[in-house]
Amino acid sequence: MSDLEHFAGVLAPVVKRLRTAVERGVSSTVAGFLHEWELDEASARLLAHLRNTEPTRAAPWSGVAAVHVYESPSTVMRAVDDLVERGLIDTTVDGATTTTKGREAIAVLLRITEKVSDELWGEHTARCEVLLPLLRGVVDTAAETGGEAFALQYPPYEHEGAPATAQVAELLQAVHFHRFDAHVSAWRAAGLDAYEAQLITGGTLFRVLQEDTDVRDAAAYSTLKSRQRLELFSGLGSLPG
Image 1 (cartoon, rainbow, N blue to C red):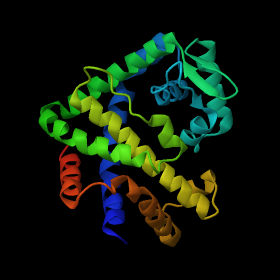
Image 2: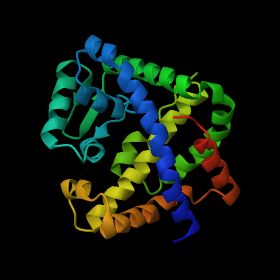
Image 3: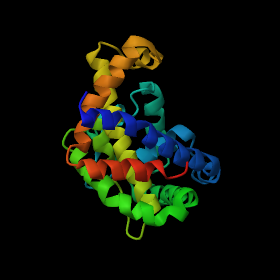
Image 4: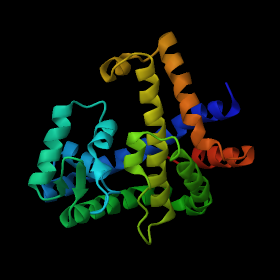
């Protein structure tokens, strides 16, 4: 295993820990949003994944399916129908775009994420500012090898005036989905489907899949020097969550 592949493997649980902390915080505070916009969690999750879309940039159905590969197509289509019915997205045969109303709802979701990330990392703003150029470099490099789920997240949404803590949260989302695509490619190469892949929680095949995922994910870090990899690992590792 190369140094880059090893780095991809050891950084992954750090990214997962931080993303989980943000998601947990959002989930605990999102009830008011769901009530106000009359959405269930599945519809809100789909809307959040469309936050980088603009009227001139449709999210292709292949990307939507890739992000929701572990969910049933019927669940995803119900969420799509719900968002259309509430005037939050428009659809064509090629994909979906957010409406003006949809962008308003996304703005509310982003403010919730900003609040949560600030509560988690507000005392570490200086460290987040140091991490930003490293993460941006990783994400831009990842765009060369990312799959369809990653493409739905890229470029990461960074609205003007967003604090460094919120920008780190958004960039971690893109880093996660590069590995997400890598793992999907790994289990597909092993002849598994999404259901079977979720049943593999240990043993030889689990290790094989993790190693293959590391190999595929490592490309995202190929432009980082060893010192920068250490800065990224230690910086993210020191953030609470």
